[in-house]
Amino acid sequence: MKHSGITTLEQFIVDQQALYKDAKGSLSKIFRALELAAKIVNRDVRKAGLVDILGNNGTSNIQGEEQKKLDVIANEVFINALARCGEVCAVVSEEDDDVTWIPECADQKYIVAIDPLDGSSNIDVNASIGTIFSVYRRADSSKAPVLEDCLQQGKHQVASGYFIYGSSTMLVYTTGLGVNGFTLDDGIQEFCLSHPDIRIPEHGKIFSVNEGNFSEFPDGVKNYIHFCKESDKATNRPYGARYIGSLIADFHRNLLKGGIFIYPPTAKAPNGKLRLVYECNAMAFIVEQAGGKASTGTQRVMDVQPSELHQRVPLFIGSVNMVDQALAMLNQSLSS
Ligand code: AHM
Ligand code: MG
Image (cartoon, rainbow, N blue to C red; front, side, top):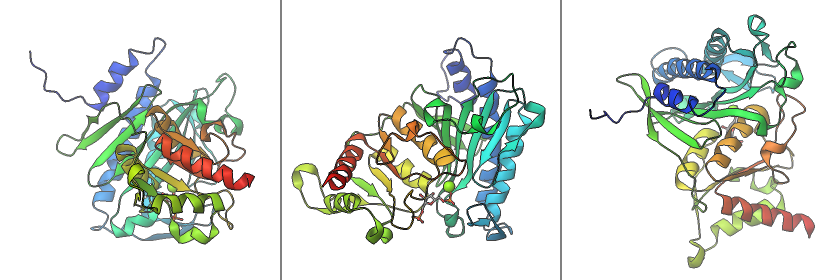
């Protein structure tokens, strides 16, 4: 019999589970919860202009940033879905000051970190936004979960990924066996495998950085930006500049086409802006699994030991040759 050719996320997860001999289906349940939550958020994002859910919620999160109504909705939807799946003992979210413990699942081993709606300044202007997630396993689930369980190095992630609510809605994720992308078929409301085994080109032609902060950047980053803009036929320069201010959208483009995304330290924010636990680590796991690289400028992102939930780190991420070049110029300026 001829196959239809469609592989749904559900089927893909079942097939992958067979590759892990000890798999008991817990991760699959977490993915089902994430998938359901993303479909709900996607529905709300798609009708955001039609109903009264655009605009500010009037409250701020722990970092003093304005929360948008959709941020708050997405946060509730993801946490509720994860709490209900029965496999997650704690959720760390960009929108919540502290860990959300799930008491009825205190004996479960999984912890999920989320940025429920990343790039939220883009909501009101109809540009791409997304949800980022990381899944961690506790070393010892016989004890009640504690804060330290939520502060693991990124290299201990068992899965990470993002949903992008763009011109189409996609899920890109890894469990350490490469990176795969699924596009939501609106008609059947299923995520279908559309981008199998994503590999980021070793070299790209795009650099993504908020140049508005240029005067605040370290000299090495300034030098690298100059390098990107120089004309040089042999190395295909100048590169193209693309930056929308939505990490997922900027990252996703560079993942598929090749490029580098930089959120450097600045004079005002020496640790940059992006958060380690629920933004940078997830992206770092994906980019490494796709053959790319992620660094803080001084170390591999996934080696950083988090000391607090909302910790920020500088981020240099993307095509391996471009990241290496940026790091070389950064180090050169630090040592001179
Ligand atoms: P958010 O999680 O509150 O939306 O903030 C994170 C966003 C990232 O998506 C994006 O890369 C960055 O902030 C853009 O910051 P800036 O406007 O300083 O360039
Ligand atoms: Mg964010």
